[in-house]
Image (tube, helix red, strand yellow):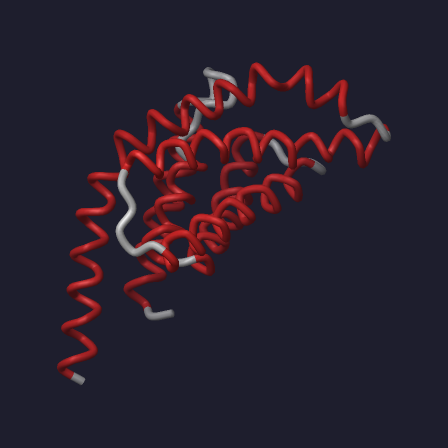
Amino acid sequence: MNTYKITIIALLAAMAVAGRYVFQFIPNVQPVTALIIICGLILGPLSAILLAVVTTFLSNMLMGTGIWTIWQIVSWSMIGILSGLLGKTFHRLSLLFIVPFAVFSGYLYGVIISLTSYQITGKFWPYYLAGLPFDTSHAIGNAVFIILLYPIMNHLFSKYAKHRFTIKNTS
């Protein structure tokens, strides 16, 4: 991983933390999951995991940390791995595929976060079912953020790919 890629991940983390902080008044609607998906699709699973870890720690410093921090890292990392594998398998994905994946990721995040309750109380289903409206708002928020951010980020990251290619050819 070169300095340029680390810088891009740091900028994405700053966007994710700021976005999570700005949208905290809307329950479960924040751009973190969408940015992790975009990062995984274009930069790969390792970059998405790094983004998930950095974003979770930094945003939870502002918003509060607890046992859920571990599960947030696990869930966002799993979403990053899945999106990274999708990006490596299918190099050109359309929004018609990415948006449903973002909706699915909102619900996947909710299932994994619900495991926190199981870890503490031993009860999974009551907590999960009570959280379904929040998971739905997360899923809808993911779709909206993907629609807004993916075309812009894809354009910017394609410039990164060209820059990376020219560096490899000149060395």
